[in-house]
Image (cartoon, rainbow, N blue to C red; front, side, top):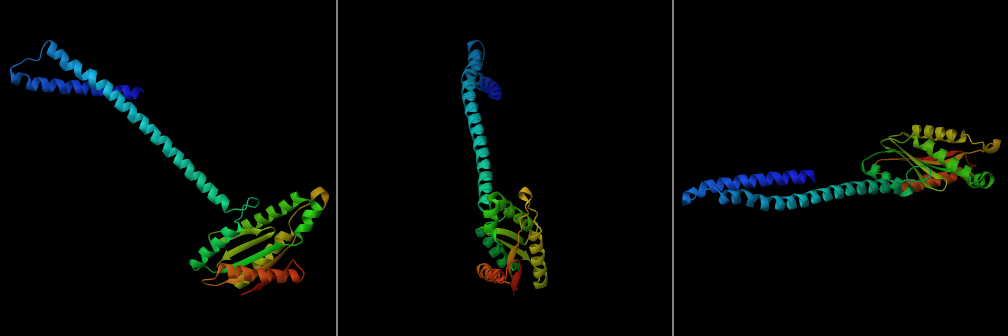
Length: 246
């Protein structure tokens, strides 16, 4: 409000100066003099009109400015909230990994960019038995720790996702076939060494894996299906093992 008053007074002063300049320029030309009541009116009238009018104008302008600032801030917060919701909708709430839809979407992007690499599809062995024997809290912890193991391998062209239940997937860009097999072995051993001992009872955890090497222009859905076939073959062969193909 202080700024509005100052601006209004300045406008009033400028109006008086303009009024005086016009009066002293034209009144003598018409044979008159700027003095007495005429001089008073020359000063008072601009002040009486310009100050209230300017105050109203500046007050409304300030209200509009503040309203625009509030609206701009609200839009900024809305954009941030929308982006957070968008990111949350792509993530599994328990593990923080990509969900199935987001994982396949990212695979599609990699394929269009010409990225090649290894797709590893894994399933935790006897997970239902872990839930039944040790409770869902321990089951959730198994899922969380599996997610942490896979998240450590994420990078520019490396993504991890929880595709549903106890099923996870990892894509490693530019990984060769031999490196893919070494990575599967490494993951299987890390999961097998998972430390879970509720009430002093050890919880054995293992995973079966199906891996496939994805070439240039690969189809994400077809590759995931091929990895899934390898995964179920690994389970049929006794679990806690890897089956791969090119």
